[in-house]
Image (cartoon, rainbow, N blue to C red):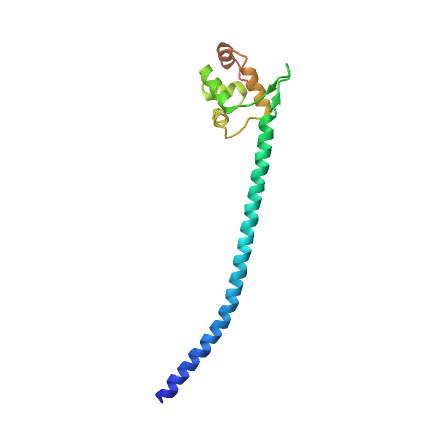
Length: 148
């Protein structure tokens, strides 16, 4: 009798392996298809990132070469430079909050402009241009006077 039991056990194992093998084949095919689809999506994503960088680079270079705003009085173009803003504020020995009050923005906004993290809108660029023509004393008087 032990022969029949071992033979039956071996046959059950063989049939079970055959069934598992057929199930695994389907899973392997599905896995390969999914991997191929993921790889294709990654390639497409990389291409989209490349195109986005090209557009940003082209747009950024055009914006840097074009004037940001025009001064209404004398027709000279006004350009914004984060480094020049920081240098002008340091030259005047004003805090960012005081400098911001002169333009109508907060001190935190001035810090972000100086770091180059954000850019001022054209109205603020005009206001910055007007401030550059005023002396420190005139700016102190503006700060002491009514709110701008």
